[in-house]
Length: 219
Image 1 (cartoon, helix red, strand yellow):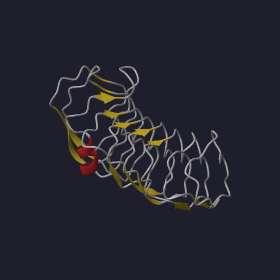
Image 2: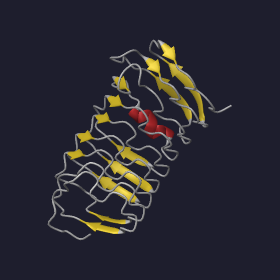
Image 3: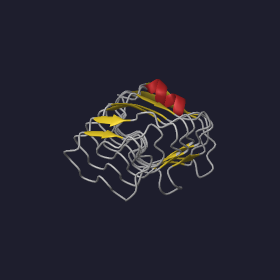
Image 4: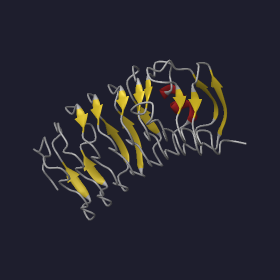
């Protein structure tokens, strides 16, 4: 699909399940995705642009299931990201969104080769399942995300789970030091399967540690 003057995509799921689509070229000034634009385009490997200099939002599930899509994406002005944008992009390596303050649910779920992410220093919310299965994110990077300015996990008190489930490279010691706006809980399966995580130090009051939150950590 070659459309070098295309600056918007309209129509929910406009390339949904186009499993033989291998290449997409849009305008360097591209601004706006439709919801679920490229869901399950499993053969898509050649996509441009990779730097979306005009886009301020990325719609729900835009690249979900694009398992062959590798390399880096850069969204310098993006302030809003829909749920599951890169869910299942198992070969994606890097995503930079330096203005983003809220990470929506399942945005990077099962991005097993994702090594680098960048967000605003004022990041204050990480939603349910945001980094589920991100086995290649380093401990140092995850620790930089979990800074004291975080105010919310999940959508609310009852929907806090799976945020870092299966992050195998989260190693060493982690500090839990947040004054959350909602009840301060360690959600269900929050660190489940983080098999390299050896120690958690709680520096703020925690109301509850929920089921499987600390399942299968390091011995």
